[in-house]
Image (cartoon, rainbow, N blue to C red; front, side):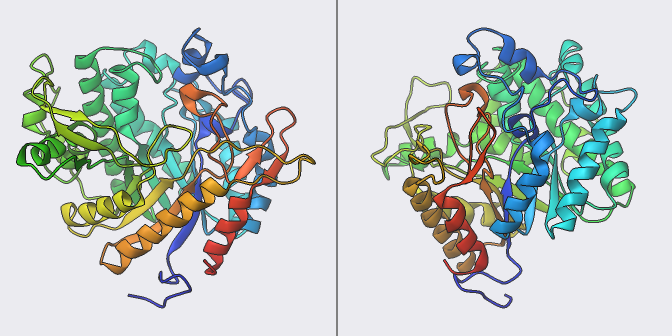
Length: 446
């Protein structure tokens, strides 16, 4: 399985770090960028903690060279970032914005000059507001506009990018954005949310077809935040409940991508929902991908509940939690990787996000940030990943979330995930203790 390095993983294993455009770039009104649904969401009172916005955030748009210097010090093989759709297509379609592509060209060139491979996510939730005004993801037209946007990105950047991710966590874009209303655009409409599920996946299929038809180099996949909750007990009803609890977040997305269909038992619980499937859609969605990206943070617990439309409820756990309130369950990470290996019959898997929000503060002289809880989280989860690989899971890489502290969506700047501390007042970058821990991991010493 390849030459091993210290720590028991093969030498070709990919170590990276990840961010997303709206969370780190800032410069929302510069160089022709159009507004996104997150710009609008942030300006709506009560949507984001303390009224925070991504207007400046970590200012990577201006400070990317400084960040790349730190990435090189960290020893990263790859940096996963996303393109801001409204930066390159201010209204989502029509004439592209050359200044937007100029930024990503400069970023990619600087990464390659530092010996770091760019991994590009095409959609990490910042839909152009003009497309939302025209119906958003519940409208089929958004899928076609996404396909066109993706193809132009391949043409403009594909000579230097060898790894592409179409969508990041379409569950969050559709369900948190259109059903629960806690993410942009903040809607609460179940039929619209399920139309968004289908059109996001259709957009993925159109982007994938454009990549294959254009014979662009490299590989392409999608990133999901799949979940397989463990049963509260070994009683048959709890085991069945745990399986049902994975339908919406996992099977509604993974099954169509694997060439299957939407889970009927889930849809049967919501008769008001009609999936807007047209002829040929499922074939587009089910085209083979080169890899599956997994974003994983915690495992849930499910028990039977006859009063729930789907017959389950999520239960309390005993584990220590992160600042997000998420339980720390590294064994759950191992379990889920093993489950994915079996369910996808050995598809290559990249862990495209894994990390921990912690109560980070600089020391008194402002030169260090001690974050032992994050180090413990990363150490335990990387060990679980190693164990999964040793037990046959075809996992090819790991990207820590996040490279730098950033705008944490509806939580604003109140949650810090980075291995680099960002002082939002003066934009100072201070590597945390976890930065040096991860440097040791990447170097093979941990």
